Length: 210
Ligand code: SAH
Image 1 (cartoon, protein in one colour):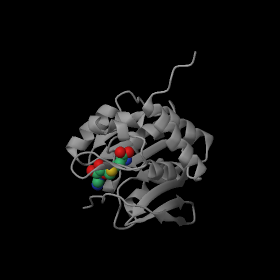
Image 2 (cartoon, helix red, strand yellow):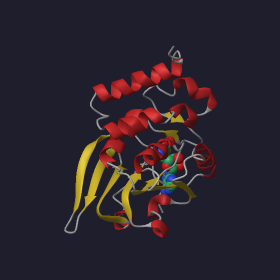
Image 3 (cartoon, helix red, strand yellow):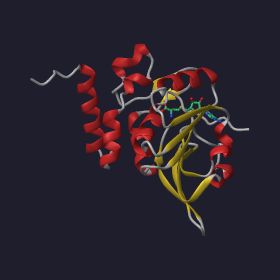
Image 4 (cartoon, rainbow, N blue to C red):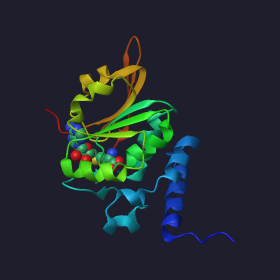
């Protein structure tokens, strides 16, 4: 006999169905990543029952775990393939990094940077079983030169302008997803140009910049 689904499992199925029906979740691999990562393990104990509401939830000091719809839209646009090296700026809960970890797989690597010490410890602990994820406590507004260049860069806090330094740490043919103010952009780097596509309006905590 099949095991009865828990309330959280039911809510998770409903949320993923909603994200698929609304056209945000599209690709098989991203849907599989969403199915396999438990968002309830990336929120505070008191918020677990709300893990599959389509809302951001509070972490420490004004940080939030992003709304599932936002994570879905950014992850789809980032188009991470197995074996890629990905830089995330703003580890927060670690949830987005966990999704990226599944997509990059065991031959890939995720480097995720968080500036706030308490949030960093929380995210790092949540990610302890994700062996292809490296967590760094640092200012990510200047990227992370040590591991550059990256196939993909995702910024999960909103910048005041497009940071040149991050573009320079992106490989040719690389993609960066970044909110600037309230506008989300997909930035594609090629030999001859930096292409910037507007993706829509999203709310984010600000990126701390020098
Ligand atoms: N990706 C996260 C959500 C992050 S919220 C998740 O899946 O839960 C944005 C985070 O960016 C906050 O935790 C904030 O502390 C962090 N942040 C802001 N400025 C930063 C900077 N310059 N470098 C690294 N992290 C930064």
